[in-house]
Image 1 (cartoon, rainbow, N blue to C red):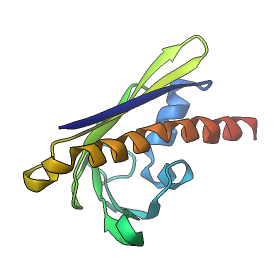
Image 2 (cartoon, rainbow, N blue to C red):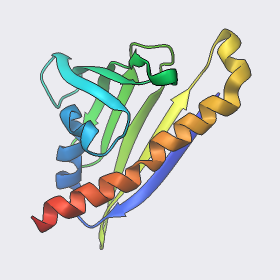
Image 3 (tube, one colour):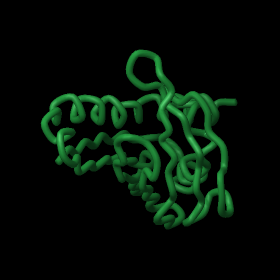
Length: 147
């Protein structure tokens, strides 16, 4: 099992942060490695929406990493499940309101099967690198609020 999480405090209203996060088309603005993304099926920005995504893989290869939004509670929580690609983590964004803004926690969970379980250290490192990108989200939303 691999698990990683990271949290930041963003000086924005919870609904502003939620609205930005629930729109899968915003991911390339703060997550590196995304090569392409589009809405594949379902209504955008809702539970059940499926996004077709490709990401940078090893040796510069492009890898499928499609995901489905499995839970969407406005201003509070967005959960997703990766449904295409070699590894298929699940995860979520968990929002809580504080006097200084919105605390956002990004968590990823992955249950490797077979031989992938033997390279858990590499998987754990990759997942940690993904959740730490939440720091970039904070910067992107700070610039958007200043504009």
